[in-house]
Length: 388
Image (cartoon, rainbow, N blue to C red):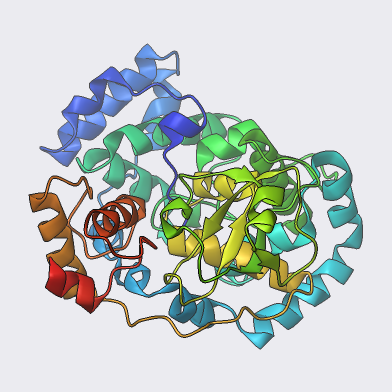
């Protein structure tokens, strides 16, 4: 599920030839091979690497499916978080105690953070995906929706192949080309792979220490602040200025406390900058998000997934179940698309009309709520849709 804008996150420049997406798949592969040779890879190696590649329509189908992200936070988190996953997480902490201690010492990442990714991405390694990784990457590079994201990953996989860590025929993973227990793309493996078990190899599919330490190193690479919190459940006063909520507004946590925000889970980290998150509006659950929360978006760009992963990390470390509150009912997918069209017609940039309450749509909802004199909590309701 990790759908990361790698161009921004790890500094990969878009390749000039990305305009060649689409058209004949065979011609596309031929051009990829020529480009690989131009980049310095040997012709024999390139031929062996691409010898069996073929398009995979199931990858495109998976890329287009987004229904799960139309669920609200409460529904989504209840679907992903189970007693079984909590119990397994507790057992994994004991089983890999020395690995987690090393992660804390070397990277300052708490066990719950990696356990949550491990659970959500592959159910603690039990199902890592059965898509042929090379076919997936080349299919998505050939597809013209996000070629600049996946073309560099093909060449990163070629580098892994040349060092003996990638099998074009047998390496499998997620539909978007991620590999291993915590689902890392080839370039991530090149940049952040760690031999955690000391066997001289980096195997993210079969070695939990390798996968966990590699994931921790990647989080550090993406900007994780060692030994700092990421998310905290809070209670907010009824008279809060709702237009100041959301990730676009930050202030020292102590200032939020002075405004009446109180913690439901531990102490507020006073000096750290923080934002108030209301995933289902002012009547629903509320969280204080610290700088580390933003690092989650480098792993996955879905707001609902990120918030659920960050919240689950807290649960795995003993935090209570969040207070759901009594939020106003949200919109279904068709209604959300209608709302997005109305907002777009009013000049707001909501991005793609996809029925998903993403960052752009949330910002537009908050802005139009303020424009109409409504509580600007960024939660779209049927009443707002009717008003528009």
